[in-house]
Image (tube, rainbow, N blue to C red; front, side, top):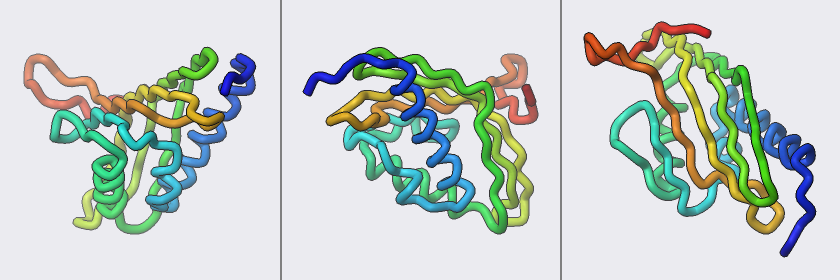
Length: 148
């Protein structure tokens, strides 16, 4: 199916999708969080392994992460930018999460996210997601205390 190219509409649809995800993360709703992932999605995350391949692997990773929190979970996206053209789009943002882990440890973390979308049957689907944190080249450790 060929659809008209309207970047403003595409970007509004992607923004709505990402807002839906943010709400799902705060609610720890794995099904809502997994909406709009392509079956063959690739995820590069901030934790091992090097990649997660396929929606089921990404679902398991998301379920493990969301279940690691106890109590309220705050999540927000900042500096969201979206570019789209016909049936391909990408977004990037600085994301922030804060909450208490099930072991009592407080987490307050920023990280970088790039998401690649493909319009399939008039629905934007995620085909690739890349999460990253900078690292200190002298220590070799992740820089988890940076803030924008």
